[in-house]
Length: 288
View: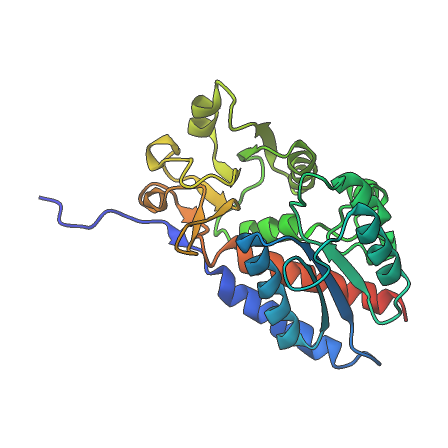
């Protein structure tokens, strides 16, 4: 009888790699003539958004980036409206100590998200959401890369096999983001396809994928039984549970089927924050 235990996937340690990136950034930032600054604007009391902003704050403190908080809700700027938010962004655009600006998404429904994003100075758009920067990202290899796309690319670079030509499926609701990720991965030599979580052929597409990237934002949406044996699984969709615990959109049991998997928490999340800080450093360095 075979007594060997079932092979499990290599579980990617995103936090360890993120810490290495932050340590390298800290050394580089110490050589700058002044500390870079990041301004974070958060509207409302959404717990997940507050946790994400706080993780960025802690990372900034580690590397020597000044973090400017604009938490608009019960404690301050209680009655802020769209006009007030646009004025705040104008102020930050002109503030010389601020090198990067993030407006934490999603915004409350009464705000025009696209209008808010377009108000941010492209030179301070650290998320690479501004249309001008997004277009540059698609055509210019020297342009900043959106932090989540950077994180996914870094994770894939750690897979111990040649991924060139591999069938890659991106499962995501956000078409703008999935299309930009699609183009970025194609440049890396992957054969990519995008599917909406509501796609009637989703199961068949997942079964065929050598590389599966999930950005769904629904707890354990993708089950282990859906995944091709030996697939590389990148879980980039996080959900905050009632007990403040983060869950991924891929069932953790998938590690019994996949060859490589990014966990939640501790996978793509820390890398995304590290990539955001890399962008701030680049923006600050470009000012010199």
